[in-house]
Length: 593
Image 1 (cartoon, rainbow, N blue to C red):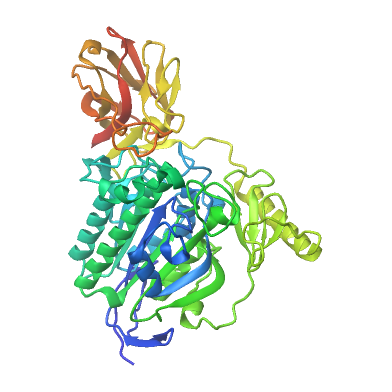
Image 2: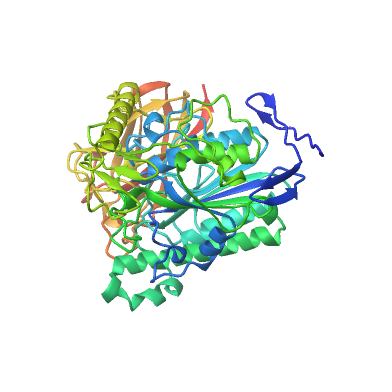
């Protein structure tokens, strides 16, 4: 047996990567360096949105090939919504333990004492990068760069308002994207992999599609445009977006092959919840937001050519909570020292799919801690959130409850559901105080303070009832106020910039920004008008906010002192019809004191 000492600090210890002849799934190989890891996660793609699963309307040859090149988990489960699934993947723990309470206005943030999979890989010497939709916190210490990722390019909100060269976040700096967002994110991931091909890397590519807005280039839309009468415009747009994802997956895998990294790279693909609409889903009941089978079942494709036998199918139930321990053990990283995990390593199933696997129960739940918000899945049965029991082998559509036929199973699962719900409520459900948004964390010079996270008082209106990527408009009175509940992490002088639009005839409003005993007063002196954008590119009329091309203007400098309080924007003089349309405040610490 050959040995290689790889110096990597992992939880304060030296980790050893042993180079040995491994046999996983019947394939033997010798590797001289730690394996790379690429995790791809799609947004609102259903289990049925793959041709390999039998969907007759869609073609996903690259995803199908990825699935066939390694292991397919037939019964893999995630959460009903986006942020909770991401939390479970990142921590290996049920999302309710992590502080996640929803999908917007700060409720999507994970507690700062949670250990992320990125932290674990980074401490083991890996280069770490995240591209795409983050959705687990925007401001430090919730930002991806504060959670174990060396590199971040994408957006931190729950969804984005425009997919063509939009405003994005690159390591905390505001930048403009390049072209169609899904393509752009893939390009960034490919470039990162090429630039770090000599190092072990952990890359997390979180696609923004097929989440709305339903925007997709003509190249992908043309095939489905003529199917709208039969399938519906939303479904056609989703399928077009998925086929675009498939193309991007294909070129990313090709790039890894060209760099001669494929044999030693673990590639993993899954979805964050069920489909964002009623479409073909293998006969399962439920869609996004539902705790029924179709709302929480996802594919899991895991490919590692030098180690995993292609064409392997694993029938055992598994979930997003299992990915942290699984990937850590596959690359031989010690993840002890983290909080107790709910997930378990699936490595034994990859090593020997015939190994006896103990029966287990997976819990899917809504963000609420109210009764009736949890569904349980065993290898054969699902008990839904209303207490109805279904045989998932005989009744995938959950049409005929079998409570009377299986009273002992019903009693067992009712007891399990009650105990689990009680534990979650007692340990994690008594959070009543609103968490503050952090400004000026010592780890970051710049802090984004978006309209999404604010409350408006008076006549100010939000551009959509869905806060993510929204802005404020109808700011017409000096009594109107925009405010954020904030905690300043480090005292200092901060430059305040606004992202806004203002017509020339409305110029001249005086705006006051205040926090505790300090304030600055600035005037809107630069006209920046923009029509709403996104309508032209939308294939389906949206419910979320449209976007604008936002101007960026310095309002002034303000001294902020450490502590908790309300950060407020208020106009003291409005010579025109309104102050401005307001998208975001950007605070940059100029000095520390």
